[in-house]
Image (cartoon, rainbow, N blue to C red; front, side, top):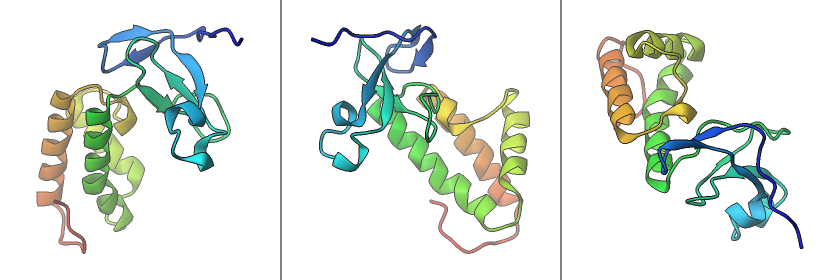
Length: 140
C-alpha cells in the first residue's frame, strides 16, 4: 500500500481558506474521465480534495488550490483578459503590470483566492477595455 506523501512546502487552499501541505496526486485521481491527463502531476488539499495542476514538465504548482467555483471564475477572467493582449494592442506583460499596479500587488490569475478578488480584477479589466480602441471579439 502506498503511503501518502505530504509536500515539504505549503500552498494556499482557497476552499479551506488556509495554507496547507498538499499531497501529490496524478491526473488519474484529479480527472478520472480524462485518460490523457493520467500521467500529469497535481497538488491536492488533503482536507477538501480540491487540486491545482503543475507547470508543464514540473511538479511546481500553477497557483493556489481553487474550488470548482473559483476555477470557473478564473476561466471567465481569461475570456476578458486574453483577447486584450492577443489583439496586439498591449503585450501580455504590460497588461498584467497594469492590473498589478491597480491592485497594489503582483497579479496572476492563478493566484486569485476568492470571488472578491475576481470582482476587483473584472472591474479593472472593464476600465482598461473602456480606454482601449475597439478590437474584434466579444468580452462579455
